[in-house]
Image (cartoon, rainbow, N blue to C red):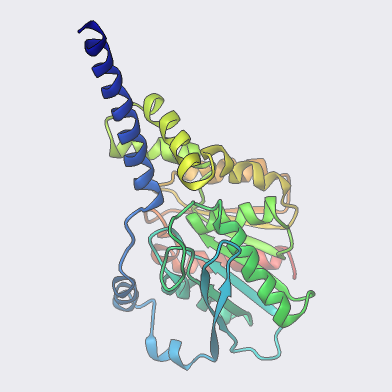
Length: 304
């Protein structure tokens, strides 16, 4: 009888441990995405997407195989046939490549061709989970390889990323290959661990000291990596090419202090634009003239 009384609480604790681990990692791995139609309509209503203009651009759709067994849906946009200058755009979590068009247009006006694509588990790309840059950086590598295959190894390209896409750009440049001419990273997080810890303050009353170790264990078991494996803060130290850091001062989803950490961690060849208006991933939307001026200043400072 005594054994049963001891055994039942143990089973209860183990069950709670497992349930918490699955619940927490489900929130991360399967974060609810915005509908593709919603993103397109939002951009149209805001005046950031003109479908007639977009459809008139010369482009080809390419499905690039990821090394993880799914395809990445990409658009190679080529209004400047004789140009050897390219930009690759990485959108944020829950978004898709239509969200990258407003950034793409800035660079098309400046003589660049462009690649916009859907991250794994987003838009028309395959993949089952979001990993906040861990697997996405290898997908970005696949996109870069395809660009080089088509345009030659001497092709000049920059990478622009927003939010998770910004973290992905830094992880690629700092842990795979620093072969972009420059990087523009808009509202990146410094480390995935600190970002999850920050969001927990707003989204749960559970203590981070309890949840994070359990989540870390289950993330490794279920998706193959730990929080500590996603650290733009470590990656940026290995990037020698120029980086423009961008953040909105009033971003409460990923605080601007994280971009400042990243900026401070990079030795040189760097600039910082702090937008005075807007929340998370709203620096361009709320400060369009200042955003473009920051990009021009950056490109003028580091000629390509």
